Amino acid sequence: MSEFSLTDLEKIIAERARSGDTQSWTARLFAGGTEKAAKKLGEEAVETVIAAMKGEHDGLVSESADLLYHWLVVLALADIPLAEVMRELERRTAQSGIAEKAARKDG
Image (cartoon, rainbow, N blue to C red; front, side):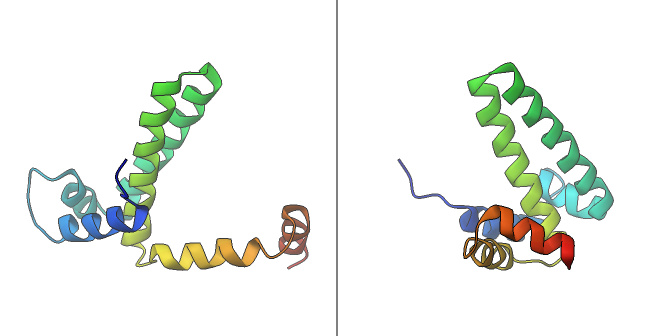
């Protein structure tokens, strides 16, 4: 199994976004802007949920990959590095999920 990571994918997305390659889906998404990429992210989220609810193993794997890819594109368009999201997740793991959720409601 390869050691391919979301960080690797984030780097590939950044390279392809700047490529100007008309045959690159990533370059096209960037040219379309945040609205287009966010819409695609939403579509992939729905498709992931449907695959999960149907118990479709291969579909869930495939749609999850699409979801993660489009999520990283949206983050890149917003100039938010994956590391920032990971730091937030790390911060949240310092307490229980219930306590963390309650703190967000109070804030």
